Amino acid sequence: MALVEVKSVRDIAKMRKAGKIVATVLKELMAMAQPGVTTADLDAHAEQQCAKFGVIPAFKGYYGFPACLCTSLNNEVVHGIPNARRKLKGGDILKIDFGVIYDGWHGDSCVSVGIGDLSEEAQSLMAVTEAALYEGIAQVRHGVRLQQISGAIQDYVERHGFSVVRQYVGHGVGRKLHEEPRIPHFRTAEIPNPTLEAGMTIAIEPMVNIGHCATRTLADRWTVVTIDHSLSAQFEHTVLVTQDGYEILTDRAVTTGVSLD
Image 1 (cartoon, rainbow, N blue to C red):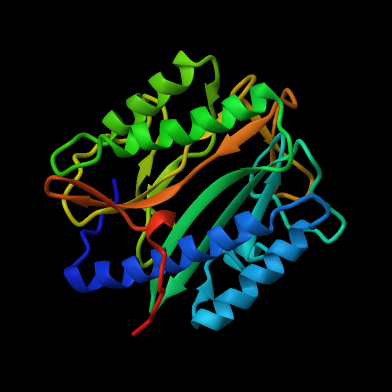
Image 2 (image 1 turned 30 degrees about the vertical axis):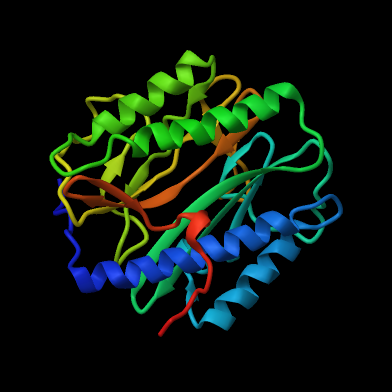
């Protein structure tokens, strides 16, 4: 396995600022996400806010991705491309994935947003997915094996009758958007299971389907959909491992007064 970088106090301070900006913009996008708004409208706002805060949108141009946001609707699992012809409508589940680079350091987070009135099943899917993320985060602390996170997420999701996507996993995050270690949201012997160390920064991002866990990629080479057309939800946070637990660097509850001073 490649070396996992442990961040310094100075590095973490920069990642904390990146995370706070990501959280602030995501809160704005969640409020904007209403029937009639297009996914391109959301992307334009994100790009405008990146300019305001003086940060680089982490996704735009990454392996050729054309936008600041990934906006994935309903049975789209991840990597959906914003589009001026895609208007949000009542009953949609919208996944908004956003990242920035502040002074060379990344923040990365995703939310699922219900548009208008959702079916009970869709509401349950979103609630279980978000709760599963926090079940995983609750395992984080120095000295814990990484797949303790994985198992907690898998157990919670499957106990509620849904499935965890296997083809896409979480990741380390820092100087690069995707670093070691890989973080599965399910138990597996195929991915290394290192011990967490204080100073690691990781992105935990369970993708959960109502139906089968299998996915496929559309002809645009980006948008990933459920193979059985079932709904999918995702939530993600960038998390710092500490000696006695964790700090959520993209916590949307602590975004007041973003400053780059």
